[in-house]
Length: 104
Image (cartoon, rainbow, N blue to C red; front, side, top):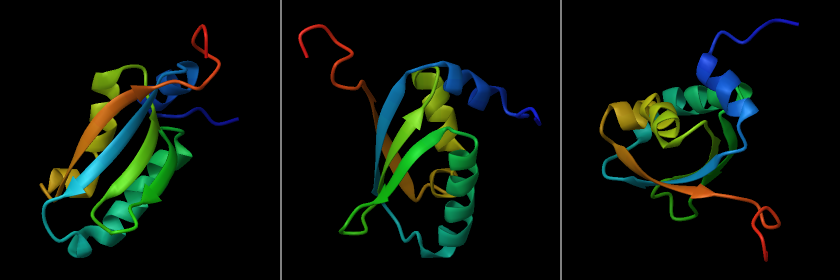
């Protein structure tokens, strides 16, 4: 089995920490759509993005990330072309599954 060359991906798979990332587009993403889709697919294959959804109003995306911590989650988002070009920004929130907290 080939080893993953991305230590962040390896660390995130070992960690149960998940982050909900909601983006807000501030510009036209169209020129970067192909590159954004390709990078998102790479991050999904690496296990860093667990789920990717497009907002119905096309104003951004909603991602479920796996990361060791908030800084690692932000680093993953910063690797996206729309973030790099200042077209979108994300709000990150740590999330857990129901049943993982006492009383839930």
